Image 1: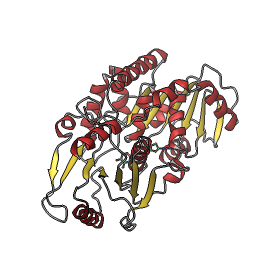
Image 2: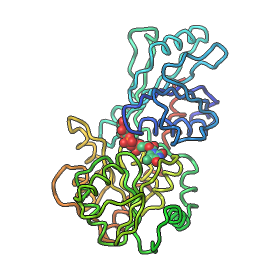
Image 3: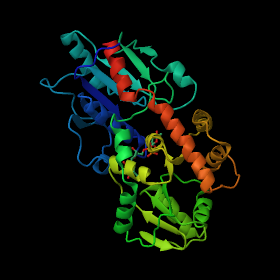
Image 4: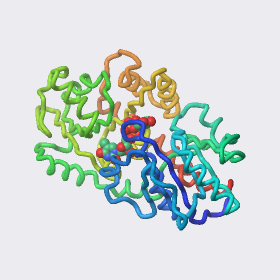
Length: 377
Ligand code: TRH
């Protein structure tokens, strides 16, 4: 049993490759560490998305530009250095940290937090050391830390009070407020609410076409999802006329959403019967939402994402219909998209709820990181 960790100084490093997942994951990590009484400096090369993702900031989290000077003499040096997704901490910071080590006597715990995957290598590589052989930190160890879906991995980001907030969420009130804000009328209890956070799936015209067959409220976040939907509509590929900010037409109503803070993004997922998500962070949040989902996986040039997708679906114990839906949504085969009827949707929801129940028996990522650091210090 590891003793609880005193408040430590964490330096978290994030480089934004594209989209919002890099900073989205790092922000959740930083705030959840701060929620456990830790002090966090978040070094990021592009903090622009935080303006809408986290407009109020967070006590205990100090956001710094990637190329800002190293901490001043009166500031606490790092107890933990965590680089997200192999982003390579700046040499200046490593040199600074090595100098602090000489004066303080003990070196920081250095962690490389990896991407999320359900593939088998994750369990094998989790907690492996990588000794540094050269440079000012020669002789130190960098530790690989893998998030994941099984007890032998680092787990997933989850705030301690998340499920309580999820339970207390009033879905009807959220939907009514959304309808009022978007001037929607005629949205009854029989409507299916669907969120669409995706890249540019080839099956999007099919999805839009099939959504018209029953009363559906489609929530489309800004950026690539909105552009993708509007491109389909403009080309007439789904036989729906181009719509404005929001519109009620026949059975399908589409709302184009503005960017919203992460907590509000989560609530959108809780409010829906079906969530299309993408990347890494929104997938995890959709699992916690416990509703039926489809994952648009981040595509890699060598198609490495195919194995990653199948590994996830295996872990999920996804029924055949949900596997097929993922294959089509991700362009892995050209079978027609089969939008679920009510019975199939219930089956998918039950699958996600069961997966969530398995995950809830495991420690969350921050709890595991705290335990790991306590062990290695
Ligand atoms: O945006 P993503 O596709 O991010 C990524 C990046 O592309 C990254 O390079 C890649 O490595 C990774 O995927 C796998 O999807 P993701 O991970 O779901 O991140 C989106 C974040 O944006 C998530 O934290 C939720 C947040 N978000 C909001 O908070 N409010 C919003 O309105 C929207 C649309 C998103």
